[in-house]
Length: 419
Ligand SMILES: Cc1cc2nc3c(=O)[nH]c(=O)nc-3n(C[C@H](O)[C@H](O)[C@H](O)COP(=O)(O)OP(=O)(O)OC[C@H]3O[C@@H](n4cnc5c(N)ncnc54)[C@H](O)[C@@H]3O)c2cc1C
Image (cartoon, rainbow, N blue to C red):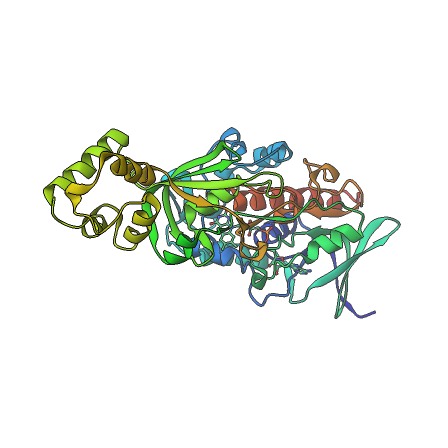
C-alpha cells in the first residue's frame, strides 16, 4: 500500500473545524496532516455570510444555547472552553480585526471571509501542519484504535484521526456527506439528515407570479399546525419555487417536523402600523384620490408587483374607483396586508441549505474531548456532528469550539502517550 505520510493526527477535512483542530493540535507539538480534496483550504468558510464571514455571535454561553434548536447541552463544555469571546480574541490577536453588527453578529472589519480562512491556513502552515490534496474514503483500525486514513492514492499512517468533513449542504465546497459514511463504517449512528436554514417551497401560484420581488421591513410569522413558532422583522423574497431570503432561512430552522406537522407562513406587510392605523392610512390614501381606480392607488401601498396579487387575494375589483370601496372590502384588504398567506409544501433540498441538521449522534461522543466513545483515537468536530444552530454566526462558532476541543484533547492524549 502506498504510504502518503505518517503523523500523530490526521485531520480529515480542511474546513472551519478541521483547520482549527489541526492548528490547535500542531500548537501542542503534534505532527498533523490535513486531508482535503479542495485546492484551497476553507472553501465553504470563504463564502460564509455572503462572503463577509459572520464568524461568531458576541453573546454569553446561555444566550448561545437559546439559538440551538433542540438539546444543545452537549456543547456546554466546548463553548465554555472556547467561547465566542475566545473566537474574537483568537482572530484579532492573529491579525484579523473584527466588528460587531446588528444582532451581535461579528464580521471581519474588511468584510472579507477570505481573511478568516487565510489566517487559519497561515497559522497551520507556521505550526508545521502538512496539507494533502486528497479525499479520505475510510479510517483503518488496529486493535480497535485508529491507525491510518485510507485514500484512493494511498494511506496516511496516524495515531489519531479527526473527522471534520462538514455536512451535506453546498456539496461543491467539498462537504458532500462522505464523512457520515466513514463514521457509520466505524459503528457510529448518524441521525436523520435534513436541511436547515433553507428556502421554502410553496404551492401558492402567487409566489412564482412575484418571483424576484423582495420585501424589506416586513414581519414574517411561521406556524406549525396553528402554533406560532417564529416571528421576526426583516427581509425576504419570492422565487419561482416559493420564498427565500434571510427571514425565510431563519424560519426554516424552526420547521423540523415536515411529515408529521403542517407549516404555513404569514407576512405582515405593514408591521409599523396596527390594524386601526393601517385602516386610517388606507382611508387617507383612498380619499385623497376618490375617482382614481384602486389598481392605480394600491402600488403606493404595496408596490406595483404586488398590486395584482393583493387585489386577487382580497377579492377587491381593481377597476373600481377608490370611493366605491366598501368598508367590508377595505377590511379584507387590511387583513391581507397584515397577514399575507404563504402555504409551505416543504424545503428546498439539503444541497441548497446553509446547514445540515442531524449527523453523528452526540450520545456516542465525549462532550469534554470530542473523542468517540466507540473508537480510540477518533475525534469529531463541526457540522458532521448532530448539532446546528440558527443564523447569526452560531454555526461557525460550533465549528471553532468543537475543533478547538478536539485538537486540544487529541494533542494532549498524544503527548501523554495515551494514543
Ligand atoms: C452559503 C453559506 C453561508 C454560510 N454563512 C455562515 C455564516 O456567515 N456564519 C456561520 O456561522 N455559518 C455560516 N454557514 C455555515 C458554516 O459555513 C458551516 O456550519 C461550517 O463551515 C461548518 O464547518 P465544518 O468544518 O464542519 O465543515 P466545512 O466548512 O463544510 O468543511 C468540511 C471540509 O471537509 C472536506 N471533506 C469532506 N469530505 C471529505 C473527505 N472524505 N476527505 C477529505 N476532506 C473531506 C470538504 O472538502 C470541506 O473542506 C454558511 C454556510 C453556507 C453554505
